Image 1 (tube, one colour):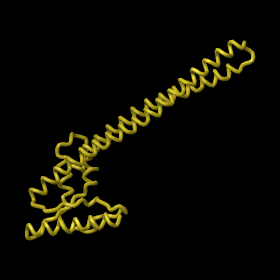
Image 2 (spheres, helix red, strand yellow):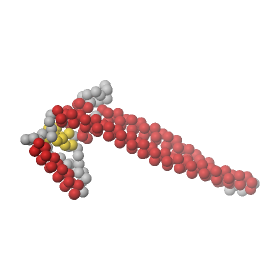
Image 3 (cartoon, rainbow, N blue to C red):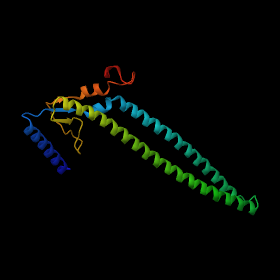
Image 4 (cartoon, rainbow, N blue to C red):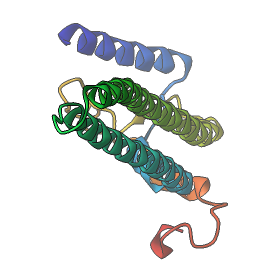
Length: 199
């Protein structure tokens, strides 16, 4: 971890020196990417879609669990019936075969439940990553355009943290572009998608 932090510090110093050699005085700005991400109206839309997908998956999963419980109860009854001494041995054998078939069905349902749960978790995780990457990409486009237009040499993320969960940027006298970026990314927000104070 210490090596990662040293390399990061060296990279930042090198970037500042290179920027300083290209221009007399580098212009530095900061953006709180977490704040921008959380304030972006598309983030709220993406979260709603993910919750809807998760709720749909949960509904299917609960239905599968109910089917499993019912099949398990049927299996238990068939086992009890196959041990019932009040019926003929042929009938007990028939019930035993039915119980064996029900056990196979029960195992298939259990396998399907596990497979569905894994696929649903993977699918929702991939959906979250795609949406997050798309949103971060859109925010970065705005940051990059504003930075080029204002001739900034470097723009740092105020929300970035070290592996120890401490802030990477402890102090900055650079321009903070966060509010301007949030305003721009939310410029085309549909009516009602933002709180009144966020416009």
